Every structure is written in C-alpha cells, then in structure tokens.
Amino acid sequence: MMKYAVYVWNRTPKKAIGMATPYEKWFGIKPDITNLHIFGSIVYVKREKEPGKLEPQAQEGCWIGLEPESNGHYIYWPTRHTVTTERNVVFSDRQIQPVEGEDGNLGNLETSVTESEQPVIPVPEEIAEPIAPDEVSGKRVRRPTKKIRDVIEGLGEGSDELRHLTASLGQVTSEIESDPSSVAEAMQ
Image 1 (spheres, helix red, strand yellow):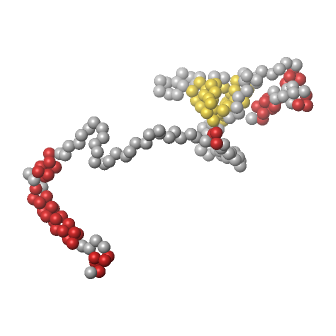
Image 2: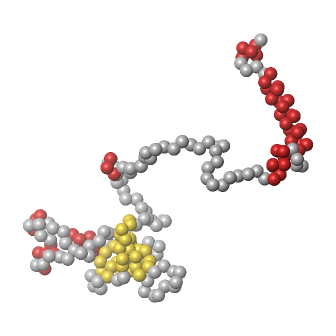
C-alpha cells in the first residue's frame, strides 16, 4: 500500500520544482500514468487453470498497487485475507464492499447531497382511479362453482342449511331495525 502511495506521489506535479514531477526531474522524461488506477478498485482475475463449464471464469479481488518487477498487479483477496501478484486483470467500475469481519468504517466522513444529486421520482401525468372491488378487470371471468350455484338456486345439499341461515338472519335484522338509532330515541 505504501509503495503505491509513493509511486503516485512521485508522478504528481509539485510546485516547488516548477510544476514538474519528481520522476520527471530524476529520469528526465515525463512519467507514463496510463497504469494508474483507483486504490481499492474491484478487479477480476482470470483463472489460470481452465475452469469447468459451470464455474466462474474469473475471481473478484481488490487492486492495491502495481508490481514493478513483473509488470503485474498486487491483488488483495478479501475472502482469503492474502495478497498475490497477478497479470490477467480486468478492472471494474464498482466500489468494493467490506467483507464480513472487516472494518468498513471510513471515519467520520460526512456527505451532503445537493439538490442536483437528489433522485428524481417521475410523476405520472394522469393518475388512474382505483378499480372498484366488484368490477372485473382482466380477461378472466370468475364463475361460481356448481355447488355454490346449486345452493344459490336452492337445489344442493346445503338448501336446508341456507333456509335456516336466512331465517335467523331475518330475525337479527328485524331486531336491529327496532333498536334506536340515536341517544334521544333511546331515552324515550
């Protein structure tokens, strides 16, 4: 990690040396910065052994710097907690998430969201009225089963039960109708 910090520092312009880089002053040529990447970027490393048909073709790791000796990259494997040097690396745009057991705390960083960064929620131009529960929507028409149709027509097994139920409901409704509907009626 420290090696990469020094690597970037030596390729950053400094005001004290006329906005040149320390690398440029030392070697006399401008540094090649095409290989600079964001520290901690997610990378995918192609497996060296031929993976099976259903196995992943690459492994996900965390990029932590360049290996100057072999033209490779230092890759941190969060699941194994190890660092290796790899050559077949593809960089991803995603940011790495802390693995269970690792501390993902970045300190007391406060972020403020400006109005331009607020998510825009689209508002429909026309708001549809809610569908009444008794309205049929869609293509399927629901019809009652044969047993229910027989009960409704008074033919099926439940016809005696249905007559008894309607008779008892009639008594209950007549009693409810005779109850007072206000406090004044109840006081009389």
